[in-house]
Amino acid sequence: MPILAGQIVTAGQLNRLRPTVYFAQESSTLTRTTTTAADIPGATVTFNTEAANAVYRVDASFDSAVGTSSASTDMIGTIVVDGATAPVSGRHQMDNLDRDSVYAMATGTLAAAGSHTIKLQGALSAAAGSGTWQAFTSLIVTIYEVP
Image 1 (cartoon, rainbow, N blue to C red):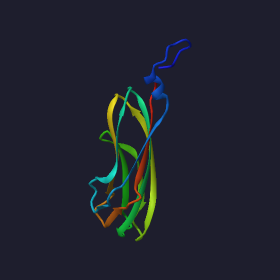
Image 2: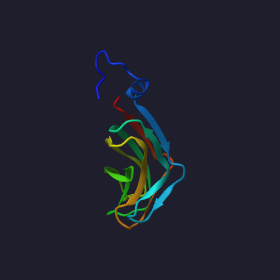
Image 3: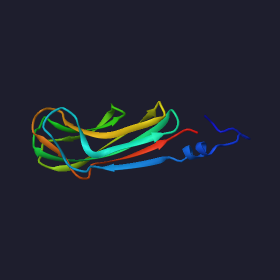
Image 4: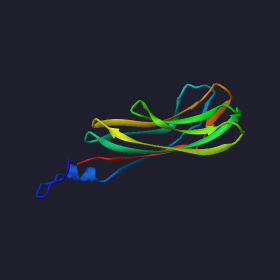
């Protein structure tokens, strides 16, 4: 909703004009050997929005270490917003015993006001080998609310 000329603006409207930034970093490693996604410990942000239709931006960095190489398997880091997996992922091919950071970014709208949770999860593309998300896995969430 726009602010109109001559309108009396409330403190709540002004507070929502400034983007809010949240940060979380992995608190302990996550090792996966299957295609079942699991939460990356500590890489979760929970926050409240005051108005419906807040816009979010998530920047996620997945610190990926291959435990067992597999030429046909990827480590997949996903962004989960209020229980729904975003259509983007950070993928690290497991063809070498190496460690790299991969990146994913997602944007969208939070339809309802109230509590929201954005987190990172990890899984493998196939049940072959093992991969570990290490200590530098992190996310930055920026929330833009409309007055």
